[in-house]
Length: 456
Image 1 (cartoon, one colour):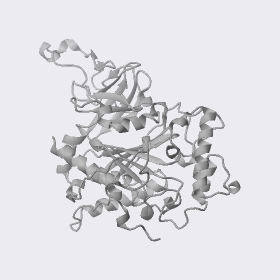
Image 2 (cartoon, one colour):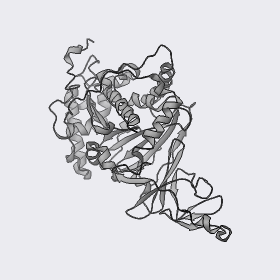
Image 3 (cartoon, rainbow, N blue to C red):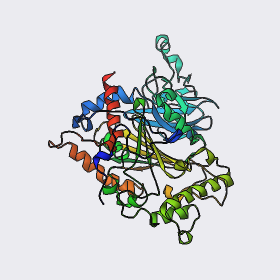
Image 4 (cartoon, rainbow, N blue to C red):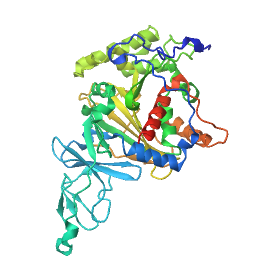
């Protein structure tokens, strides 16, 4: 199919998904982040990895978990980032604390489990005990310590912690401004999804053979879909994607769903993907005689009917929010795919020692709806045996670097390709990426990364 030529793209307006959009769909003014090519060593050098640790991971706000993972007093979550382990624990109905997961006595790790419940924080080495505010309550054989030793701070080392947008956040930077200020407009957009009412129903952590930025970049653009994921061409428009960028490295792309790609030959006739999405809201495609555009509107109307029946409050969403994918990027390492039924959280976490490996940590946060007549949307891709009641927090399923993660066809395709990209950036023949304006989120990301490193 003949594509639109380059002249039809307006660099000051961006890709023309919704140039007249209002409110949540309003297009941000174009921001020019230049055309510079960056040294590929940032994807594999230990020196650059250290720069990131000193200036990004230990300075920025980091998303830890869904607030409902620590909903009751004594609930904790063990957040691992690089070589650090940080314990987030609810100490009261209104307060959540965060501590470095280390005993001040001899440095023993205090908690090894991913999450759970504790009444006190205890050390398994010498039985020191701390309350949920990190205050020391017990030193075993205290009388054997000299007075000068006990005059030191015996409490756990605190980490700055806040709750916003249904998530728990931490930063190792005591001088960081509030996380809501850091998020900017993205905070208001995330609030609209009421993630604090959602529960994690699936959690997968997989080790990939690539730098964390190599992984993140694949999620920050749709330019590769027609080549790597041809299955997507019948169900989403990957060319006219709206891209918005804000301060502090925050960004968004709005990907139209149900409407096929401009690259697909037939964009009107109901196809297999359309039939699947119609069926997902209880509409038989065999009884539907309209075109794809009419099917999309029908699906939106049907979702509003479902909302009224189960009091879901979908009147706060635009039609686009009901069916399209609103993907928010939060610097440095987050993508959140937002839908009324649930949000998909992707965290790209650096390996502790190897710059050419990273952990993809992904959770499906689902809005639990009571009623036998309500079913989890099939497009969410939950395994059949998934407990969708929200009553029990699922264990984290781990995959090592030699296993194919059970993340669905699309992500499995990415997991196979991305290590080849990582291998290629090491070539003497690769002189730095050449990003298109479809990849503007990636350029914005590296712009913010460079500024973060230079300003500290």
